[in-house]
Image: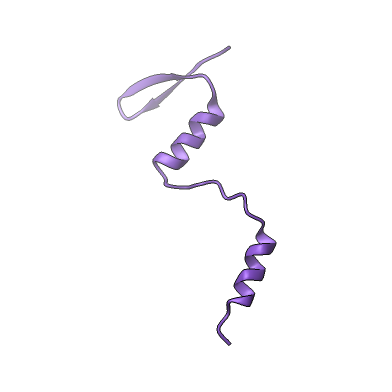
Length: 52
């Protein structure tokens, strides 16, 4: 198992699972959640909800 060192601000810390670290940074720092919904359903809902 390899660990890489990532530097953030002024300290470094070891990271074992890069994907888990990236997901945590996307959620904690960027406030971005992974969207696993179907784009087709979203487009149908948007089309139906248009105010004619």
